Image (cartoon, rainbow, N blue to C red; front, side, top):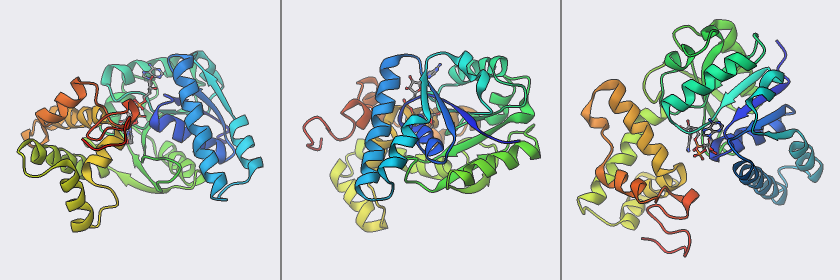
Length: 288
Ligand SMILES: NC(=O)c1ccc[n+]([C@@H]2O[C@H](COP(=O)([O-])OP(=O)(O)OC[C@H]3O[C@@H](n4cnc5c(N)ncnc54)[C@H](O)[C@@H]3O)[C@@H](O)[C@H]2O)c1
């Protein structure tokens, strides 16, 4: 099967990055979101990312404009009737994803592969919302997609070998290193990373140290490139909370309960860089 046109669902942090890398690899991209405002925001972030790559001489100006030309924006899922492969990167919410997979199954060509970039939700469960579970898999990109090398491939219980081979092939075409993870809550990277980030919030809640000192401790004490709060602000506190809730719900293990302080920040609308405020304040650039 030749993959030519990719449908990407969600033009947020991940979807815009996935669309950019897919278009840079020569694929035609249909980028879907719920309204034009979000699509334009996604396109602006792709444009800025390409500008940075151009400035660093990683791409030429011709490559920049060709990449942008390959991305078509849409609010109509029916446009996915032209897609050979769909990568879903919508909000981390079970009903949202189940509904999107059901709709994709209805509108996409019957041979199209449907994958989810979910950080934690069961691929087997998502696949069961379609009539083609053998053509559904997980394809978990890392943030920021244009820079991070890894893709975790997740095989649902009914994913076929042929589908999984195509997922691996696409990841490699997009310049990524592929690892295979079992369909278990949060897979490999987030299974280890997200409880550590949550633990940092518990440490803050208990008054162990300040945001800045915990970040400094983990950067200088563990050689982490970013502190846990810098990373939480980058990932999105709402996304981290959603991942923890799936881990907690699916395993029943209380060690995965989201820290109350994390939930409070999300309730306050402090979801991180994307809202201008998380554990740090990006409106004034001063730390909180
Ligand atoms: N943030 C990260 O670091 C990260 C890393 C890897 C994977 N993920 C996963 O990627 C997915 C997206 O996360 P994100 O950080 O990009 O979130 P985000 O909030 O930045 O973007 C989500 C986008 O999905 C759109 N959306 C929601 N419902 C939709 C629908 N029905 N149709 C079309 N678009 C819809 C929203 O409007 C929004 O633009 C989640 O499943 C998340 O778990 C996130």
